[in-house]
Image (cartoon, rainbow, N blue to C red; front, side, top):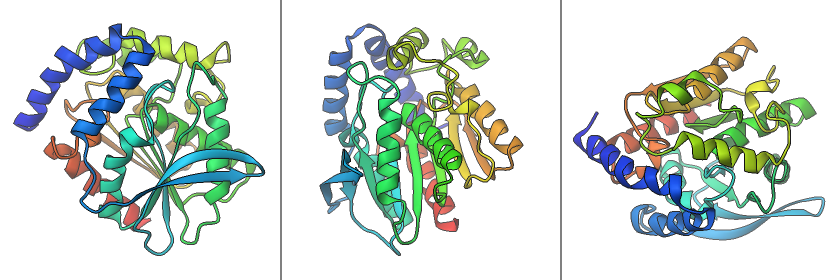
Length: 295
């Protein structure tokens, strides 16, 4: 682990984790947007454009990132516990991935809870995919945290509905089980430097709004993936969501899916978003880009 990672972990545990534990949802939304503008920067010259993803009249606003090669496209779902975050908070990280992989991307602005609880996010994700699934060169699904869970839930729906499979799906520190009952949620409660376990469980309940935690569209750990595309997943070993990745990888492998599972030591939740601040972030993005190019 680099010295920067050590210092970042301490800073996050002293500042970000207490803020996420105590702040109101609106405060979290505003602060995340502000911090993203200050801390996260796309490659020089990156072009962002507003887009509308439309399927049969269901429209989802999105942010597009240029640089398409061979027509392939990354469809990326931002994290934020289904209650905060936006394409703007994550577009810098995705722009770097696009630069390394030689692809373009689209980041849907899916509806958030509590204003729009489950299954609104899944409905928007499916609309987004249907609108781009015939892209020449194919589509690569991606996401982080709750957005990683959403990408996997979408992959489960694509498989269930018999839609054309994406070329691959990647997830950074995904939330795959909204019961938050995995052993790592307890074991890593103190070691986790960003996510307060109690607040994560609270946001899951808000998003579900009474729906079944085991619904595969909410908790993709319970989805069917036989015949699905290759999946790449990364997580840190001190995250409360460590077992969400471990169990998800095992479930995918049991169903015959080709899985690459990366577990890094003592790195923060969704560490690639800290590209430019953390050397491990750049390394992981380049590693992921290599996997994407090999698809």
